[in-house]
Amino acid sequence: MEITETSSDGLKRELKVIVGASELEQRLSSRLDELKTTVNLKGFRPGKVPVSHLRKIYGRSVMAEILEQTISESTRKVISDRKERPALEPDISVGEDKDIMEKVIAGDADLAYTISFEVLPEIEITDLTKLKLEKPFAEVGEKEIDKGLQSIHEDAVTYASKDGKAKKGDQVTIDYAGKIGGKAFDGGTAKDAPVILGRGQFIPGFEKGLTGVKAGDKKTIKCKFPDDYPAKKLAGKEAKFDITVKQVAAPELAKLDDDFAKMLGHDTLAALRDTLETKLKTDYETGSHMKLKRSLLDSLNKIHKFELPGKLVEREFESVWQQVTTELESAGRSFEDEGTTEKKMRKDYQKLAERRVRLGLVLSEIGEKNAITITDDEVKQELMERARQFPGQEQEVYEHYQNNPEEVAELRVPIFENKVVNYILELATVTEKKVSAEDLFKDAEDDDGA
Image (tube, rainbow, N blue to C red; front, side, top):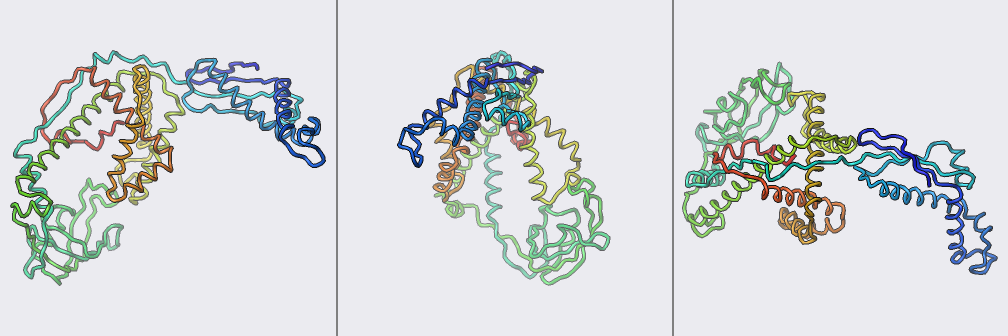
């Protein structure tokens, strides 16, 4: 076997491999000898079929199998001998000249093919003990518990139909049809829509126009979409809504006492407060850890600069971009509705893809150098956690993963990442900083580890 490096540009490699016709012939003869002992052909006793006859009948198909096997085995050996780590599976090209391939199959020519791949970069990991990170935290006090309890109380509100005029806090059920410039617009029509006055869930002026209405009333409300309204086609536009009031209902709040707590499965109001306090502390600690993790990943991304395998970045971008466009299509929105352009979003998500690939390689390198591994028990535990997210369907979720081993393999990624992150945090210098709950959870939707 002859190997020639035809190209080496950064992380890109291209190799030409030649396997001689004589070696292929040896493999073919060996394979035909094996077939001789197992094949059954009419007119021949078992094991007595001449190899020349087998070559005539099976030579072409057997040679095709040998070529496939030879390419696979020699590719692995070539890369192993070079002690290189491909970023993805190598691309194999055997050429498009049918006449040459026919000669190879016939045993009259050498097999020549090209291996193209990108190698993983050499990464020099920073001294993790010199990392300095800040961990924001918020305390759960009586004020936070009271606020949480109030939210639970308000969420349990019911509404009773009334005959009087609608006022702040009431729920008004309406049919409405909106028009801009005399024409209906997407999302401007609904039936039996509940509007709670004072919540500010609709555009300015809409709820104000419903104040004082009674069941059976019909009226037209004029209001204007804000200039910064997310749907750019509607932003700043004046609209008219023809309203039919179906019902006006007043809020009814249960008394906040032990009986209310029992409705929610707790013996006393004090027990409900204790449960809420425990949940808030867990939520705050989770939020604190996510902020710390984000800070760590930001630092690792900033410190480590190296060439990225282009195809890894391309694959990550395509995955993210497909998700973005699918969500836009499902919501019936456009790039313009999001206040941007496709070009800008592509640029932003290209940077995100580069960040994810860089961090993935850094964390992988740290994990490998420090022998961080994942046990089967850890994977099983993660699987059970996923199943618990679907109450009543745990068995179906578990069976789904059993029938899809590739998805079980995907569970290992976040487990590994978290183990490496926790390992780094043990080495880094972490100082705590007290913040408000609002600041702790600000921009929490962006703290996804990306």
